[in-house]
Length: 393
Length: 143
Image (cartoon, rainbow over all chains, first blue to last red; front, side, top):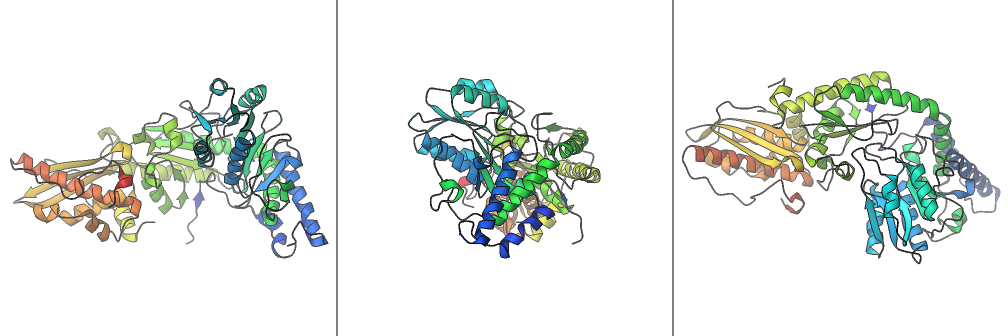
């Protein structure tokens, strides 16, 4: 009950920061007015939305009227992909994306393919990196949309977004990036990086769940996704989630304010964690060694399976995640790891640790020791472990 | 997600290890599917007097190996042969639907180990039961 939890799964979700919750609370019961109403308790909430829009916009160097609130990253991705596809279908029906996108993008693409669109899934290198050259080569006369994630949720690799943005702009093609893992974690500039559409989410940056936004650069051709009232300048109908939007704005502003110091602090801790874990024999780092999210490490432990590692870590109060098939309903290992050319048999032994604001050097030490013990225990049981790695019989 | 019994057998697995000069050895599964079981049997007068296992896999695979080896120890070969995956799963107070194949793997591994013993001692191997495969096409497995 009193056992301390060491949470190293911030890429899955973050807690909502105390000050963010405090900022939200008045908007549930006291300031409950509908922003579309004419009386003052409604109108005052409209102002609150404007403030959150400004907070979100300034985090990515956008204009406030280019921010459209949604219910989260998945909705933003669906809107971006489907909205841009159908708005441009007279020009062409070809979309370029990558093989390592989040399922919100991949499955939207699959659905679009069933509606007559043609999708090119670009490969990645062994670090999970897309090459800008491959993007340019894939462009055709009928290409209408390029969607490349800013940073990968599993292995943390940060994509060459500015270079891809430049290519997209040169060819006059709409460029979307799923930046759910990146906003508030690394600096982003939609202007200099030539981004037309960007998805972001509240609960990955210490904001609440169920709120996100889509940045739509002025002049971008995109259809509405939710039809109904005139909210979000008639582009995303539905009464606004005022407390959620307030929380998102507060969380983004907070994240951006602390960004440079927090990036350095997390990078140091993450490097320490990675270095220590790689001392365990038969381990490999997944993702790019340096071009990666400051909070992400992802390591393969050969000869063992990830779910069993997570279960043992959980008993020690440590929360992490895995790309193993045994952790999914599909029984297929992570599509990201397989796209990187990692063989299935070792992909099962991948563990993702994503640290956060509350992570301390002490936590890193505890997790390192716990993982060493766990790996040894499971390797002693595994028929695959070579004799020289078994010190227990 | 898992019963207390599964967690008990996963965290304190019984019969982990290798039997030197075993009477029979069976291995089932595929590393690319994420689980491999290997079982070692010591047989005397057609009775399994000892069983040990090594498993690469998830919590359910390890717990199934542990429970299955417990259940066949002291049993005749015929009794051990008829141990069904369902009986292993039930003894563990159930397994999640997508983990039932782990109990199938245990049943299959026991069959392989018994047949290895039979063949080694110059006897005919026994035929497979209802479920004849695992490690492939788990999605369509209805067990």
